[in-house]
Image (cartoon, rainbow, N blue to C red):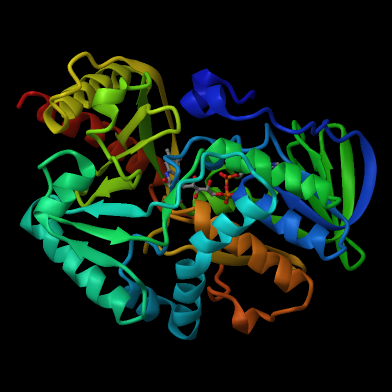
Amino acid sequence: MATTPETHGLWARTAPDAPPAPALSGGRSADVAIVGAGYAGLSAALHLAQAGASVVVLEAAEIGHGGAGRNVGLINGGMWVMPDEIGRLLGSHGERCLEILGQAPLLVRALVERHGIACELRKDGTLHLAAGEAGLAELRERHGQWTARGAPVALLSRAETARRTGTPAYEGALFDPRAGTLQPLAYARGLARAAIAAGALLHAGSPVVGAERQGAGWKLRTPSGSVAAGWVLAAGDAYSTGPWRIARDEQIHLPYFNFATAPLPAGIRETILPGGEGCWDTRQILSSFRMDAAGRLVFGSVGALRNTGRAVHRAWAVRSLRRLFPQLRDIRFESGWYGSIGMTADAVPRFHRFGPRAVGFSGYNGRGIAPGTAFGKVLAQLVLGEIGEAELPLPVTEPQAQPFRAVKEAYYEAGAQIAHLAAARF
Ligand SMILES: Cc1cc2nc3c(=O)[nH]c(=O)nc-3n(C[C@H](O)[C@H](O)[C@H](O)COP(=O)(O)OP(=O)(O)OC[C@H]3O[C@@H](n4cnc5c(N)ncnc54)[C@H](O)[C@@H]3O)c2cc1C
């Protein structure tokens, strides 16, 4: 299970190499064992190691192999659900959750800068784009709810949105200056390098296949070794396998693809996103676009690039880009890739206690870069005794497998193809 340009597209082509992380061999012990080297696991490892804890990270495949190496790279503040809805769903944890989510992009920026992580960080904000009047009404509502909490978001006019994006296709936009973009796999690899420098041990190619209680802690097994640890942090999220696969099974996998153009010629490049914001729209089958550091336009939407989906989504992407940016005459994609966004039933993440001293967050609903980093830090604080469960951003809940999960996932995959096939005819 290598992380290659075939599986992880542009990000595997342009990320700096991963730090060495040999497979676990034989027995080890540590204060904390972390399952999964995505943002949450790596951020927890970094913060724990910095505080002096001994940490072993076990990664089934390679660093950033899950969502961390496949996503769009939008560093968002907040979630899909409206701020008021988060408050309503999470009760006493709601405002704390919103506070952490709002600050999370700043935490990402601080970590990137403090550890010198080369990940194409842009601090130019994001634009949530209004598709039609209904989209604009949604953004007005979001704007009101965020500004009531002191967030520095701004609602942009149609003309200003057209100026910033380079297309007149949207009614307006919600600009979030706290947000930005980065190269997601490079960020994961950089976090891993920082965690190792702080003293954490990382083992890739080391899937956790078994877990049992041992004294007050746990013993985790991989095919070629074991780790005895006082605490276990389960950070496999939507890609979870092994003992805590339930974290995956309680989410619906929404496939999402991205295509990246070749670097655009300078004359065209400056007509699209001249300010460097990352964008996505309010449609139910949404689209997103952003530039990478070399001026490649990365364009994505819901769907899996496999079987018939490969051709359907590619054709739709070409037509959509031509409509949005007619100046892109000859559209050629250098890379195409896709991954699974884990969606919970109410679109809010989860915190689970899988047993004594075995916990984890999951279910970021397509918003994992900043929240995953922030929640990883929260896990470290919990293990270190700096906070208790009452101060967590989420309540403790029991994992519950989603009924008819496979059927729903097949429905979304087919539905995205039908929608893109139909849209391609116009
Ligand atoms: C296509 C796509 C687009 C997205 N776009 C965005 C975006 O623009 N902005 C944003 O904020 N978020 C986005 N997301 C979501 C974001 O990528 C995820 O929420 C984030 O990666 C979650 O981080 P994580 O550390 O919890 O899990 P992951 O990054 O998925 O990492 C989990 C790791 O755990 C490992 N693992 C699982 N089981 C085991 C086991 N038994 N033993 C050892 N290791 C194990 C996996 O191999 C994996 O490497 C997107 C996701 C996808 C797929």
